[in-house]
Length: 485
Ligand code: GLU
Image (cartoon, rainbow, N blue to C red):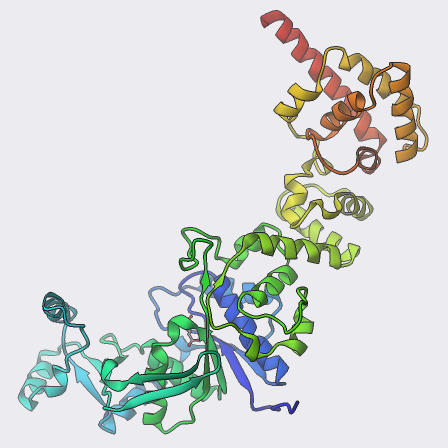
């Protein structure tokens, strides 16, 4: 395959009016991969033209989020807020060529005319009132100091392009409004700034969400008006919620950091997100970013919306937890635990914890949700488990077991298992009548890794201490129930 060296340039252009959205990460991913596969460049542009709604916190969060999933950009970040003068200059260039006109209509006036259209069931588009203004009216408005926006005049004709994902897309120009280039406050609109910058940054391919399809003909008309080369466009299908409506903050976690907080791995996120809309030619499912940089092709993007499936994400993330080296998982777990205020004993201990949890965990948070007892003594006993597994006299048996455990050296799985089974024979009870209470006593839970493995990881001191505490708890409970029951 011939590689398009050097000339392929893509970008991701988030608006910092919210945190980094899952959909933006997926769009970034497809742009990044297409750039890498073609030995091209991947760039980042921050579209912060809406000064009221943009904030440094959001910018920072977006950049950290993109880095966290593993993206690197090849040139300095471009901030649109640094270029207001140029957008204005470019817009005025169109005005000077007679391709744009000032619009003095106030929002109230437009609202009123819009509602008249609505009443007579006509679709509203800017009605070119200001295009037809007489010279006197213009002069009067100027003298009054009326705020004015610059509108792009749409000529008759048809605008078409070959979308990289959807194929031919055609739009009658008569359906396109004379859209605004400069707002009344002098700031540029998205459609103006995006074209000026994509040209400045020599962007060759633009992959973005389907929700931008209606903007593309407008942007193509601007490229033509400026006399610039038009990049190739590809519109990615939307990501839908399980209920087939658009993925949204109200129903789903959409901020990438929500996933980081839950202990998802960047590898899992990338792997899942690429499969949201793209699939390889074979049945393969597990991909690293590096592998995707070789294998990704635009042809395998499906034009229909993709449904977000959290269970699949969870499964893939679990696969990645088991694919990464033990040292790597431990390193990440250590950071994660610290962020969640858990004290960490040492690396060897964490290695044992990770091994013992095996495929019971799919994300880092699972370690503290179903394995918090590895990191703290402060846990409650599962109530249902207690009712089911704790029987009269169990405390006497547990005391005997504590004695046996106390004498063990080494305190390992085999010795503990023999000691417990020996005791169950002596007491003529089932091993389970000891096993279940012991698990509850040392972990507060009714499930988890194999009991003896768990005990060995915890170590003699903790096991004995926790079992004694449990016996005290049972006795205390017995006394209070005797008194009150
Ligand atoms: N700032 C736009 C967005 O976040 C960028 C769209 C584009 O890629 O042109 O949707």
